Length: 165
Image (cartoon, rainbow, N blue to C red):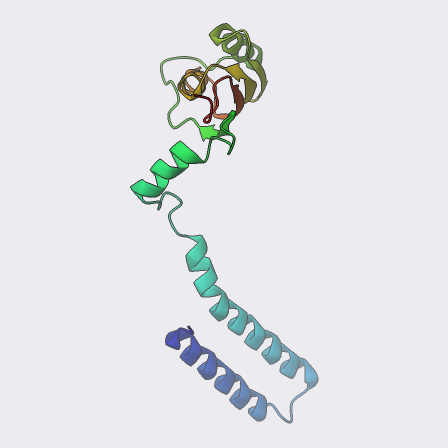
């Protein structure tokens, strides 16, 4: 559906440009080209406003139901054998100095020796095999709590899949 305000502004802009162009009929081509360029820029700006408004929406505008669905369903693959995703650390440990990448890797290894981690500037990629989803979630939370970690990308294999009972 076309927004009537933008339609009205577009018609007024085109009418104004046409009136100016008629007034410049006897003028040189440089003036006419400048008017045409300004007109095109105005139309582009006016029609881009709805798209810019959509881009400025709040990223955290998911409903509680959507957030719960994403948390519970989307991180397990359909066969229930992998827990994977990306999580960001919301707060930094203000009282502690950030660990170096090497120290973060050692700390992750101390959480569970089956884990493999790569760390670059506090961004962690962790993979390995754990017993179940609860253990996987615990691993991710522990990694996020390490000082200096900003984000955690994880792909953890689960020994007990969703369909294993």
